[in-house]
Image (tube, rainbow, N blue to C red):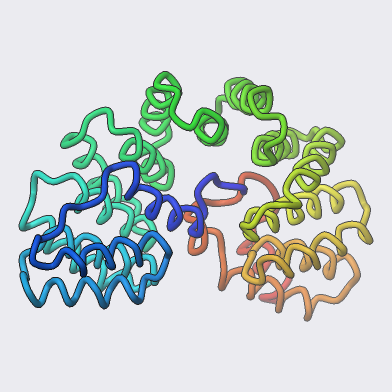
Length: 329
């Protein structure tokens, strides 16, 4: 469930990629506007970035760099169709350039089009072989498309390159688990923890594997440690995941009061977390409050995993099945 790249993290990676790939060289006659555009984007002022890009494009409608940054800004604002159209124009003008392909792939990934994202990111990887940022996003797209062996192959190359070793190992652990390689998944999760014992994500990944494998006490220890380490995180979605994971573990251990507290905390941090609602529904079903449970399950489905994160749960009850069992009678 932790899925290494939820939407907020993907947006952050798209911003970070500017520094990794290189700042665009914008038209000389619009140098000041170009500087303003890049600055706005790096400061996550996406509305300002669109405005500055439009000013540049008034001077030169074929400015591929301005089109690319505008498309990225629109994508980061959740305006995926507009972003896709702008990035497609940039691709048509510069088919051999990596940035338009890369960020159109990111757009499609954020818009829950993993197959299209794979096409674009595979093309970007052919244009810029060995570029780690491109490979990282390529692996994310393959993961979302459930093409696990291909995702593992790309991640193997990233691990060999030493690129963002901890996060790459954690991601490879999740992919290996979904591909049925439990031993390899545990090995990667423990290796990531050994490299960075102060990072919460490794413990979340390990806890999810332990929970799925029926090792509930070990999972509880893992999630306790993740929550302890996650206290200072600024990314509320990731902090919420740790509490929601522990809530489900406590449900399995029949600690309803502890589970209820973790669910409340998870929803405070991420009011759209589908598994918080799924977990609260399980509590309410057990208490005989079916009506409230069904309301929670329908809320969970509105924010379901396919829509919010692009992948099914790695453990636990499926909300669709729970609705069939308890709410359609």
